[in-house]
Image (cartoon, rainbow, N blue to C red):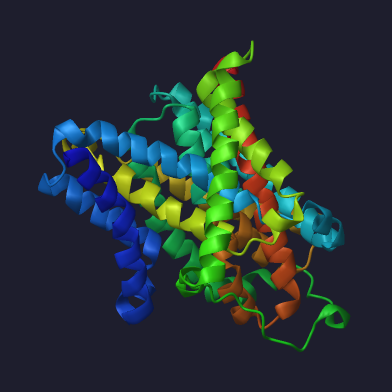
Length: 381
């Protein structure tokens, strides 16, 4: 009974947080992901979840992330990527190169300083700053990164990310406009609509419930195939192969139009990321956290703003305009969810599609890239 109640608790908490975000301005300003971490930490510190239920917490954590990956990838329109402006794809490629370069340089520095498993930090940075929180969670499971280290990284990233986002929304447009080209006036559009306003309310109707069932079943099939095939492959670590297979199967399923156009899939995927976040935070070991130094804070800060600076330098060399640079930077370092607010700040709806498409592209490649970086750095180090 304890296990059932524990599972229900983790599954229900994000719903309450989303309700708060919809009705309370302060909660909406903080954000659902941050609140999920906070509530999870409070649950963990309060002792509400007994140690005997820790296995169930881990099961819910792994299942939620496993289902979330294909659900989020179902909506990817691979064919539409051909229609994204060349400069946006170029800028995203430069952002990925910048993140990988900075994360690799930090690995060398931390390895020489004697840091424990610095390739884990580099992998999380590459995954997080090319696609977002889902990639971070996937890499955590694939590389068996301890809960506390993952949580510290994610928590520090939330704080540094808030500073980065505030910078992008305030000073960055004017600052980078001094040495990057202007967005072409001919490419601007007048319509400022189409800003994302996602809600879960439509999932409660008959159509929404039907779409939800189809999406969950399809995601479950992907999980079943990945879990079955990974141990059977004669190469690689099964945990890593499971994540790679989930990503591959999710992208492959996106070619099926009914799944690609299933509006419930990405919402359910995001909800399960919230569940995953609560589960991870609830496993925080305060005694271990107290022993950590500020190295992760420094790593995340340098990875974030170092990548931003290097990306800007690359964009200057390749003549990428300031609006495209900023929208792809946010899509990579923060995730597509933050693109609409930056579009509004830039007053340039023409970059909306570029930001969303390149952000999804980053999410699609983030798992591959983050895991590959970790394995290569560990092998070379």
